[in-house]
Amino acid sequence: MEQFDLSEARFRPVSELIETPIWVFSVANQGVQSSVRFPGAVDSKFTTEMSFSRPSNMPAMPTYRVMDSDGTIVDEKHAPTDVSDEEVLTWYKNMLTVNIMDLIMFEAQRQGRLSFYMVSAGEEGIAVGSATALSPDDVVFAQYREAGVLQQRGFTLQEFMSQLFSNKNDAGRGRNMPVHYGKAYPKQYTISSPLATQIPQATGAAYALKLQHLQNPNNPPSIVACYFGEGAASEGDFHAALNMAATRSCPVVFICRNNGYAISTPTLEQYRGDGIASRGIGYGIDTIRVDGNDIFAVREATKEARRMALADGGRPILIEAMSYRVSHHSTSDDSFAYRARVEVEDWKRRDNPIIRLRKWLENKGLWNEDLERDTRDEIRRTVLKEFSAAEREKKPPLREAFTDVYEELTEEAQEQMKELKRILETYPEEYDLREFEDGIKGL
Ligand SMILES: Cc1ncc(C[n+]2csc(CCOP(=O)(O)OP(=O)(O)O)c2C)c(N)n1
Image 1: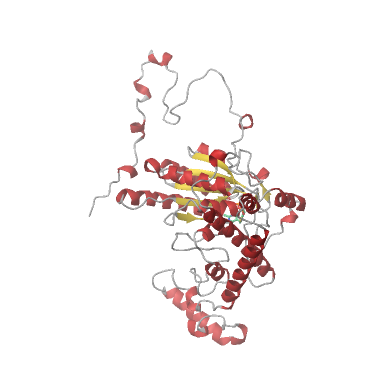
Image 2: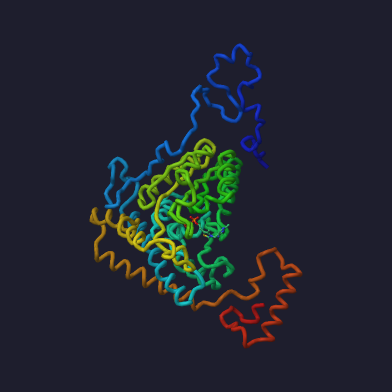
């Protein structure tokens, strides 16, 4: 077997990193030194001016955009040239699909047909736009408001609905809460509820990809794309993950959706720094802030971030995509308890990624009122068709509540299964097992 070159992976002693250890300078020499290569701050110059760096005196990081809110390309030099009109139309339809699915599923939850749901209204441009720049082999770790990433990467409406109704066609076998999607290929790690856990996992996965590529350079290189909200960036996991990714040079693109709220906590109360982007700089990570309502800007930034993440052996990149959470946090939230209706209405009117791209398409003569109406009708019909099919489908057999934890059922799990069977048989009028594949025999 070929020997695996671990030279990239070894830990270097600090003394190797310091070209000239400070103790070799003579006392006489030190007078002419304008800087000393401290191990902890190698390029810091000496100064006699005592000045504290004050963030409020520094300009806020700019926000990269390609297209303004009227759908006009701001600088023709940056107009998207590598995509066909058909591709852009697909992106538009993907954003519409997620948006329409969201409206229907939110209502379905209100009717009691679904236990829970989360929409991504206002943030479809970040999800779909970034996903257009990923390859199917890239690995995605998402939070929960990125249905557009899955939609753009080929997740079908049947797959969405099967997960939402926990039926037997769900890849997760009905074991997760609604919207906790996952898929083996294109690789999408299953979403988990505890905030920010996906961020260090993404760093670890990126490190593994880097080592795999070193081991077999013929494999096409791939990256990890890791999504999270600005609220999740307050978790310790965010900081650990960024620092590990920077120090181990991992090919991961962190994509922060800054939508202004972490449930009821507005960004003003979440941090005092310049958003999340400024934290990337602190960790020595190349960072860009983009207009998240501009699908072209998000795509361009992600494409370039992906290229940079793979260059020179790999490195992390941070993208902070600015947007606004138009919807309630989830079906368990009423956001008008903590923000004014007028604020939301204003955002809906002022800017939205779907309306922005629609204006661009209309300006190019690629879209019009009739196409909009027909496409919306068609998407609505398809979503409803998959909705009713998935809702009618059986749930997985009951035994699957116990399987797939260990390769074989543990004695304890077998005992629990037996006990469950005893209870179900003792109180048949209390439990309707018809919706489970094979009913009681499924145990
Ligand atoms: C560790 C942990 N703490 C708290 C929560 C409860 N919680 C769920 S979502 C959320 C807000 C997250 O906000 P953000 O990351 O900005 O994402 P957004 O919902 O705005 O898209 C909170 C506090 C949780 N799921 N996990």
